Structure formats: structure tokens, C-alpha cells
Image 1 (tube, rainbow, N blue to C red):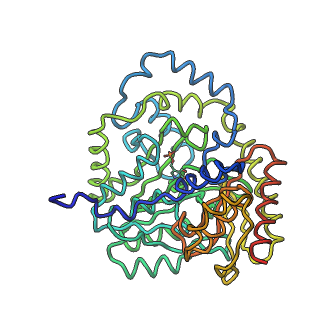
Image 2: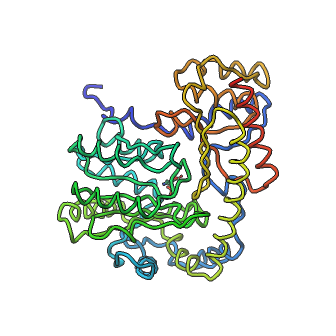
Image 3: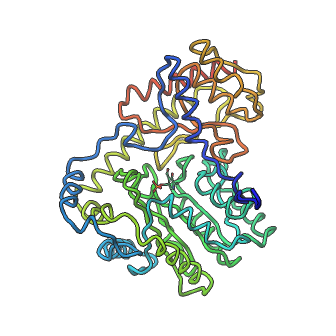
Length: 431
Ligand SMILES: Cc1ncc(COP(=O)(O)O)c(C=O)c1O
């Protein structure tokens, strides 16, 4: 090309969670049954949508207004509903104008970083959810800057590491938290949230809190950013992909906090609204459905039942994995993932598993030449047991070796058997 047409941040855009699927499909073609433990779509994993939710959607489908554009910010009645709910919870008060709808949080995440000044950086957790880390890195054409989540301390963030990096890098303008966290399932305790707010206030930063899993937690209390933010500028991100669950609806929203406290933050928030205006609006149907579903008396009992099932599976998996030497396992308290870490020095790159057949062995052979030692394990597991999990290093931008699986398998006996098969494969692999 006469002029370079390649986007400066192109190399930063990776999404291993989906890339591994291609290898899985090739292995399936050799006759191996694959258990897809790689992707966080409850519906794809067999979660049944309650019939009363389907009835509400069906009713809305019959309304011609569901086929129209909606206002750029989102339907007023839906934003009013969300603002009212938020204000009932206590903490910061918001109005419908503080809410902006997107076509899923993926869309929101893309825009939040794209329209941030390219010098301004947002520090995020390590391990990282790759949509955030890739989008942030691509906007700055540089690797994502991270603070450590500590697997030896329940995956809580290392606040000393966060402070050190913020002090050392004046380009850091914001702190990202994902609460509950993907991939670790960690829920930020209120005390830690408050410490992060103090840090943000001290260094004049804004906070982004991805709360897509904020109604999916068990065994601990969950606090939203809204309850602790005080006067610090912030953005909370919510959506219905995981909760209803309806990931195919492509519906999520952001809530802006304290736009009136900082002119730059207000200008940035307006840029996001202006950018959304160029697209007219986000999908209308799920916005029409949202207040009816979330406001239904059956909604929270339904979520409570799902949370109880995730908690049980978290217990099952942690009991099994904690008996395998060489692993660090923390029980998740939110979302529907479990992350297992190989202790330092446990993997040395010489391990292998017998593949299910010679063709499967051939498919993974070139992929085994990598210094990402957890990736070697993940491909070996795929070719031998047909179980597809995601490596922590390349899938979640982490310097730890490990993998993420889900707690989504609805059949508890099948779930137990999947975990037992993974545990047996690890024992065999590292022996
Ligand atoms: C932490 C987190 N944020 C955002 C998303 C994207 O959600 P959406 O379906 O709304 O684009 C996901 C999806 O897995 C996620 O795990």
C-alpha cells in the first residue's frame, strides 16, 4: 500500500478464548468429543431461560415500538428504571442522563478506550479479561499496564503494586476493576474497594468498574462501585448477557458517576455519547424487556437459585483440585469461572499427554513449541481428553501459568466428571 493502512495497535488485538476454538474444531474432526469449557456463554452451555422471561420477550416482540430506533442514550423508561434501582441501593445518586446504552458491553469497552486520549492509560488487573486489556492496549499502541491479583491471597489485588505503578507512570489516568472478576471469580471486598477509591482520589484518577457479573455472587457480600465511589469520577458497566442470560441480545450500559466533579471527565463522557450518536442507538428490544424482567418478583429468586448452583459447583471443583499437588486454587465467590494456577516450577516444558489419536497428536504438535507452558498443557488436554479450557498466560494476559474453566455445566454429575478428568490429566501431565 502507498500508505500504511495497518492500525498501530493491531498486534495488541488478541482473543485467545475464541482462537482456541479453531483448534478444538480440528481435533473434533478427528473423532474426539469436545467439552467446551472455554467460553462464558451460559446459554451455549445449556442454561435454560425461564419461561416467564421468554413470555415477556414474546410480548415485546409483538409491540411495533420494539422495531424502532431508540434514543441514543437508551429508552427513557429503561434508564429511569435503572436509575431508580441504583438510587434505592444507596451510595451515589444518578439520573437517567447518567446512563448510556451500548450493543453489549463489548461495544462499550471498545468505545471507552477508543475515545480516551491515546496518551491516557488505564491500569487493569492481571490476569485480565482480554476484551479490556486488548482494547486498552490497542488504543495506546502499547502493552496493557496491569496490577497483580494475588493467587496466594484469594486473588485480591496487590494494592502496593497498583500504587507503585500509578506513582511511576503519570500517563495512568484510570483504574479498571472487574467485580466479580473474570477469570478468577474473585469479589472485591468493600474495604479494598474503598482503598482503591482513596488511591484514585489521591492521584486524580477515574475508576472503571465492570459489573457485568454484579448479581452473580455467592458466599460473600458484593458491593457496587456506586456504593463506595464518593466524589471520585467513575464508570460502572452493566449488562444482561450473563444475568438473564441473553448474550445474543447485545445489550449493556454504562453509568457515569460524578461528571459534575471534573470537567475533563465530563467532556470524555460527552465524547462517548457523541460517538454513540454517530451510530444512532443501541438495540431496542432488549431495552424494552429489561425493566419488565428485572422488575419481576421472580427475578431475584431466579438469580439466587443460579448462584446456589454455581456455589455448589465451585465447592466440588475446589475440593477435587485442592487434592492435586502443584496447584493453587481459590474458591470463586462470583461470576461463573474457576481459575487454577500451576505453582512456580511445576511445569518445565517437557511434559506430555498421550493424544486420543495420531491425527489429534499431529494437530497440536506445532503448537507445543511455545514458552507459554500453560498453553502446552491446554493443547495437550484438548488432544487427549477433548476438554477445551483457556490458558491463563495468553488468554488472560497473565505472567502466571494456569487455566480457566467455567462453572456452567448444568448437569452436576457431568460437571464433577469433567473436573475429575482435568485433575487426572494434570496428575498424569506433571508426574
Ligand atoms: C468481564 C466481562 N465484561 C464484559 C463482557 C462482554 O459482555 P457483552 O456480552 O455485554 O459484550 C464479558 C463477557 O464475557 C465479561 O466477562
